[in-house]
Length: 402
Image 1: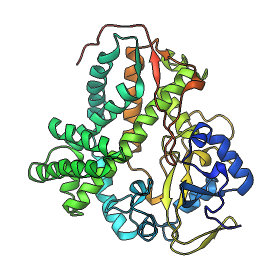
Image 2: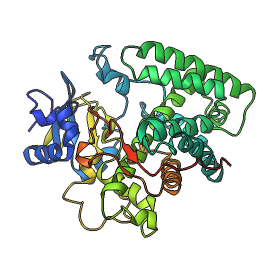
Image 3: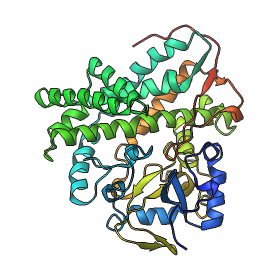
């Protein structure tokens, strides 16, 4: 059997709304037809191979010599206006490089993240969360995604990165435009200009923040390398984090094993987060690699320079390993594995857990405002993301801002 996207069945078109509506059903159908690796299309005319088997994924993620993360040969054949190209193309950052270049970037990146003060981070999340909750607590309803999860994650990341409030507003404007396909080029330019000002500022006046630690690390990152590693930090933080918070809250509100139990204290929000990271990780399909020569894996020929995408969601739910009670089990692949594994998992866990705890403490009687089967999911090959998460609760007075 050979890989490739030619003649993909409908369930292999991972970018379509029908796929987003029932991803696990589509993963099962692909696994039954193809086994551990299935041919897909990431967007029309862009073939790839999706890894569905847990053990196969672990093997690939730990084999950067045969499966490097550098996409430059692949992207030469991809049109500039391809919708998935901005998410996949090469940049001078840790995510899109392999070998010694990756090691240099990652050393600086990991050091910058490891020095984040978790006690201070708890305070940051609290100070961001309470004013946000105060904007809607008296209304009795809210959309968690737009009114809470996104602004909380973004402002928390701004403070970790060391943005001034004015630069933070410009970064927000640029990031918003970057995700808007109409204004993406302007958004990248505007975002880059703001972050370059931040880099210049923190080179001259370092503080206790991620940008300062990157700027003054022994790896000696230049301004362009600084820029794209910062953009990578925002990209890895905003979309996955807001979806992790929202997806975990949906689980808490709809699953009898969690609903009530979290609020009553018998289960922690950490348990809900781990369940989501197993079942519906916010980055469902990611950790893309590009074999430099054809390679056979599990009786499948993977063509040279064609993307090999790990389905973190499908692998976590592989029948070969997904058995029994997962409570407290963190062997999922939601953070990746191998040399490109997410270096910020403890930071992400804390932000998500603190965000959920703040919301549930402030509004303990909140409920889902629509039937669970009416929740809509955004189409796209990479994420697992709701379009909105409407909640209802008894109106309450504003909280005291510490």
